[in-house]
Image 1 (cartoon, one colour):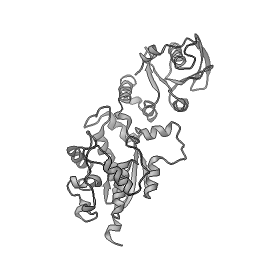
Image 2 (cartoon, rainbow, N blue to C red):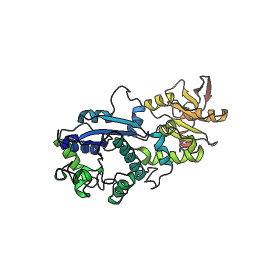
Image 3 (cartoon, rainbow, N blue to C red):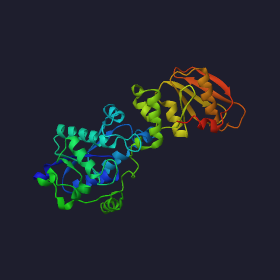
Image 4 (tube, helix red, strand yellow):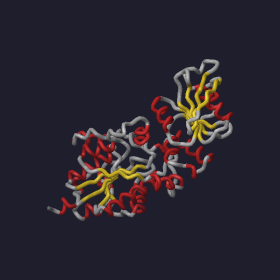
Length: 345
């Protein structure tokens, strides 16, 4: 067995086009690759799985790894990741996305996994200039330094635009067979995928973190100002990406489903609260967070009725159910949509 066959790399793997291509480039050079997927609970892929995804069916990440024929290791990192989102050293992007800190964190996790499993270097699908916050040349150097992977962080899609790494210097990989892709366009990546017959990968936005979303960022800041960071849980983080979010005049949080999948998710979500549904008309599932008082429940019932098919009726019946299972029935006047929108977070 030659030296090249014994070389093993761990690849940060989202299942998207760039990370899929980076793994394939390594495979073309005879490197044994393990795909490492880190779950932060801030991914649209994870959220969509919660909203009606079949827990038995493979995820896009799993399908992409299987199509490549590489082993996949999945790690949940939410508890370690949350403090970083609250206090990023390098600040936020356009939302509450700590992109530079995030890359450093993920690569430190990959470095630890690499060392514990006797792999030789770390691979990513990063492309020079593709993302303005985390993939410009100075930032790429910062990320490499702060992750502790100086020389062992390999970016094959943009290798020609970057200094040679230890895998290249030691002859583990052939630099001439790498690439010099840069910028935000994806024509070169799509052409590579077509050349290799790669069709199983997430679309460009498919695995994105929703911390960059402006609506989510607004809800995040609102949550911190009212409930405080100590109240953040995985469930609360995911809930902020679902439904309409409103604040009653008292400051009580109300979440209203927008469609069937969100209604199902809200009906089953494990948070402290009271649940409301309309009885005589199709309508949303609503959660009133915490332990609301009677006036707050009535306001939430009016909001629920206002988003139901009975919104033009003079009175709508709304069922109120506590976490303990106790129920009551309220007859309320639907709240006009414009008044509800004025309460939106």
